[in-house]
Image (cartoon, rainbow, N blue to C red):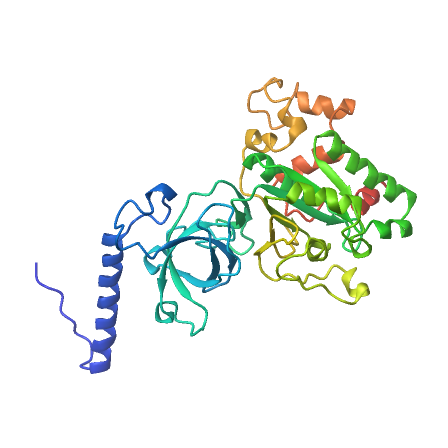
Length: 395
């Protein structure tokens, strides 16, 4: 077979561009040949090349940006040295290692870092720099479907011990469907979930029907085994019994804080003396309109004990595809009836002899929670499930 011969214009610059393409291909081949799995168990991190890796160190990812991340050394799990901040980038050969995810690394990841100078990081900084060579397998992760790319997963945080879901009764209006979606993830990851209902002070301006509906939904969650706190964070301080009880639950743990934009997550964090004070909108009128102040996820040490991962507010929350069996597992009351329907793979939507639908009809399962299940099964966005929407449907 004859060799391919370039027959384009005799232009030196053109030849140079082809040469650049050839070198890039050779480089990709080299990375592929030398590729070692990005995800490796921690007990293997120093088993090979011990001399070469003498200066390498385990760390926790505490903040992630588009081109770089901040990490803190963590020699022993749970002992994050938050005073020692390093600027990190992922080793180039690993940048495509988690292609099904929005980011290669996320806040909460345990990683192995190689110290380097700022030439590898290419950002020009006085902060010490490192390259992330490996990540440990995640023990837990909270993820949603990426709003930008449907086929991709957006992991909010990893290696968390519990989930703190923050919502507000009003401004922005409470979305029970969003709470249900978070609870599904907590059940799947086998981590506890705590529900905070904030802006209790605004209930005085609402109708009796609205207040009773909110109280009913909160009681339903309590009966399902979840801890629910009703707060007015803007008017509370550390001496509040509810705040002290929440701190007791957070002490010594990594807690993911998440919820809708503007519900008061940062104000709540500030009550626990965070190492970095969180920005809060000073104008209370603007605060109650639901404007968010947190723009990226960050892991923060609390002066009163424990760590919190504060995340930006979320306006919609779509879960990835799940079968009826998988989705049923995320609803505590539906999971208890699994195996009692006539059909093994019953979707609990329109099938005959469905134990779940019978439980809804008799009141054993909340009709509102059941509607939430059906909406998730049908792939809706997570913007539904608001209390006033329920009133409009009834009226």
